[in-house]
Length: 356
Image (tube, rainbow, N blue to C red; front, top):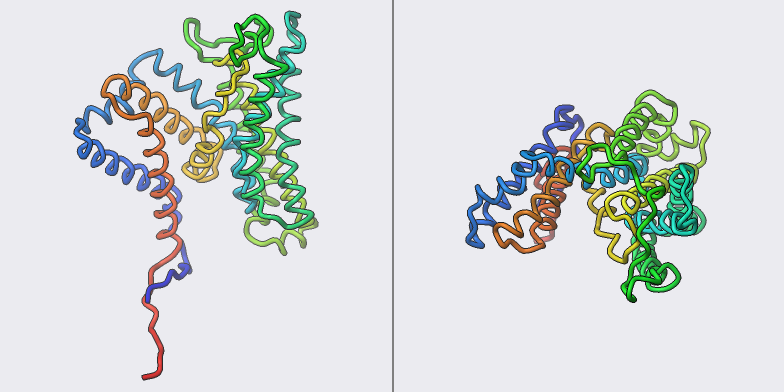
């Protein structure tokens, strides 16, 4: 009988090799998949992973797609390091988009430089409040935060749909389920004229730098690391066991809420029911692919954003199904977890005992 046994020592080079192995395995899988469905695998991989990098438009769209992924993953990485599993970032992202967008619409058509910062603040508060629900149940009743946060995602999506179909629906929109277009004061400035690339990407990079400092150079990072390794050690350091639960959900909720309002005030420009497109779930892959390191998360966010853009291009040029992006992301996550498991554990043969 086979069993997994934890290795006594782990090669530190696995910090870099595991993501590379996962990416390599995923590329091999999609190569075989393209062969099976009768498509040129070399051409398909070129269109998905290389072609978007060869034009200004492709690079600008890469920035647009990567921004929410990086911001959400930065928030999630704190909880994952601490052993708190927030899987409901998609819901917190949706609530942030709703709260921030509703704030912008509340002052329509008033203009002012204060509208956008106010919407950011309200969106962050909304994300925190939504994240505090599973945190409260975890701390008070010891419920499974994975299930509670995940189920709240669907509540948030329905809440957004109800508001867009109801009070926030554009009165001049011919009954379409969408809000008014945001005023110029409620949209993010563009950093490259003629593209959709906005300053949200610069904010993501600043947040990555801030998180790197907090996790690597500040006492906060020590508490996060201790919580992930031993809750008893966290208590000895002067913090309660619920401290990191609440703090993890506050940070991840705030970051997801911020990403939500950046999405609606950036490329979308209004509230629509289709705002939740899976960024919250994809950000989980980004966080692990980046090894929960803020700098690694930036590179992982760009890679996963590339799959969105390249996947859309492949649908148009090669007639590939819409699910191809999700397939690659799913295989990437599976390969990442498998490589991580075999890095930390070894397979041993357990002798069977019985009476003969």
